[in-house]
Image (cartoon, rainbow, N blue to C red):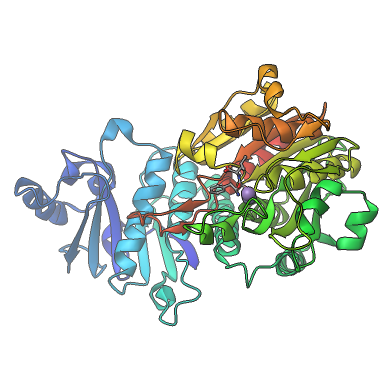
Length: 496
Ligand code: BES
Ligand code: MN
Ligand code: ZN
């Protein structure tokens, strides 16, 4: 998508469609509608008086041949209540315009910016909203929406030249949203096209494309590292496991911290011998979403070039039942030396993360952040809307939460507490890999945290937020790319 600023008066901006927004109650005289030439505003007043134009969230009103405008069409998007308006809402409103226009065969949009001082923030929201809305998980349709994509976005300032900050925001937003879309592409892949080997090849391709270092370890190397927990999951599958390490270590960055991004990379989770019911099992092709998130973050870092050291570590395997698979009651020895009784082979995410966290520390990471589709329990607690955030180190948890707020992603801190440790004690080994149904997301998180040890660690349970089951006016259904923007925001702001 080509994105550029135009500074001519709004009436003279050419193209297929000029897009503005207005608030609920007074859509013809609020928001960016206010900036339009008066002739066309008169028309909108009329529509408002007949209640065809209300300004309710995501309402789209399209005028053809609008008077006083060079553009062929004018789209007015409802932005909802003015006192609830935010950057996150602007992202959605812009996304709404994109999906509405695309569906009508329009490939170029001129988005009218407000004249306010927060221009860089608006540019960021509009560009992100546009790029994210222009995505469909339709790779496997023979009739793709692809032909309908937006290929040109104009940011119309109506006179003022964009500030340096606004120009930078455009590039930053494009990079962040494209990284998120890349993650969505990975998550969307079915497991027959996204085996651990293919995920590793994908990581390598991405690394080559953006100039990062990528190293892939295979089963023998994983065995040599004594990753008994990871191997205990991998042994049931005919597909060889992969441990993917992507490094972004700019020499001019401070030596510490070194952030380790650990992403769960289960390319398909059948549950193993503790097999899942067949209903909805297909959704488990998304169980590598944590790994995909981290690859998206690494892509964005390579392009944004912040002065901070980051490594992604992704343990990738299938979780399959077979004659070779782990069985309930088996005991494995993790890389840390801690022994684990596998009470439920479907609690495999924490096993692969356990070894990956220890490996990340061995590689020199001084702060650990993991993202994982870890538990069904988090979806019961927070639904598909909010990512669960866990960790003992409140300072780092706060940093993640603040970044989520700034990036417009919903995250909520869940507790960790010594009293829950009882629940995942084993009768015969150091730990058991399940803590029962009660507090399932908490015990799963805390199990993972046991392997971070004293290293600051934050865990993101994205089991609910990785996928959206409904199409939104501003977003396709399917993979969301949750947590990518938050982590990119966190890491780029650490550097400054
Ligand atoms: N990958 C699943 C969690 C999951 C559930 C992700 C729904 C996305 C949507 C995970 O490996 C799992 O199976 N967890 C079990 C743990 C239980 C056996 C202790 C769960 O949540 O049921
Ligand atoms: Mn599982
Ligand atoms: Zn899983």
